[in-house]
Length: 391
Image 1 (cartoon, rainbow, N blue to C red):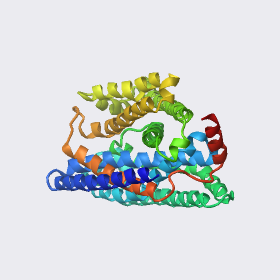
Image 2 (tube, rainbow, N blue to C red; image 1 turned 90 degrees about the vertical axis):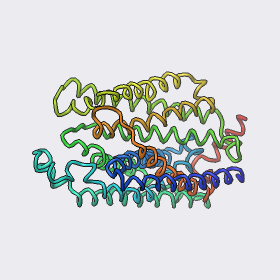
Image 3 (cartoon, one colour; image 1 turned 180 degrees about the vertical axis):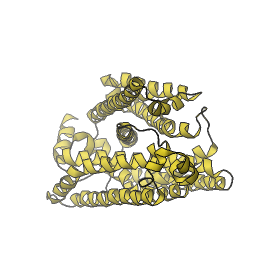
Image 4 (tube, rainbow, N blue to C red; image 1 turned 45 degrees about the vertical axis):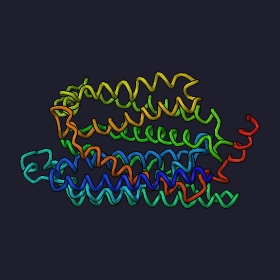
């Protein structure tokens, strides 16, 4: 445990210092090219908020099911979703960049576009800001209650905290994805007001869960040879997590391909424009990359039981998915602003690394403050006993 705490403190210190440094570099761009900075900020904000929400959704599923796979990763998931207050702070700069990011925030664009005029009562500064406050307020309120009850369970064998966790998680697995759907309509879809899709946000949400699974697999592989995990974690835990990773790789692919197939078949000008921008110029190579490394390669490798039971092999697949998801969010946002082809600004790196550095620092702080393995959770004793017996 002391070794884990030492590593977490080092991660926290390095991540915070790097995050502050990269945010300062990003701030320099505010006076040089504010438009590029706000676009980069939106990309980074969407990714790191999505990772927190992915952890949130998986944690609530674990509270409801008490699965073996989730018991060893629960504290990682909780530390992840407790970064939501931080992301609420990082939402504020988005409000200052609305004019640069969204056509509905530019009066001249609204006056020249009938579609924007029809949406003006919903898409406006006050509505956008109020909904953002509501979304984060709802998520943070639920997250803090769940975290509180989970920690209470550490100090008692009574079932009351777990009952509370399940009582809130039941409606929570509906409330969080539903509010996140509206959030991503605001934050991503409204940058192209003429385009709409009924399953776009489902693809984003499934990608969040996928990248959250990849994230906790990387962490578990990092800590699995140190106490207390070395006495508890077995290849079966990685097999279960690998199976879940495979399931969400397939689900994300199904949703993303279904959206493409429906829009391609319909061939409506107001729908196909979104895809045309994402296969224009160099963007088509990024689309091919996503097809290969967000689906095909992970899908093929995860079919093999040996890859899923090996921590070293599974962590490579998880890292590949994590990196591919970064590029998926990049591909979902950037072609709107750079339709001619891939254009990378240095703030794309500094904003992502800056927000990510602070995110990891807060995550590490959340993780080291409390027992890294959840105690007295449902079925914990059975899991530990069975693991030791198998060993």
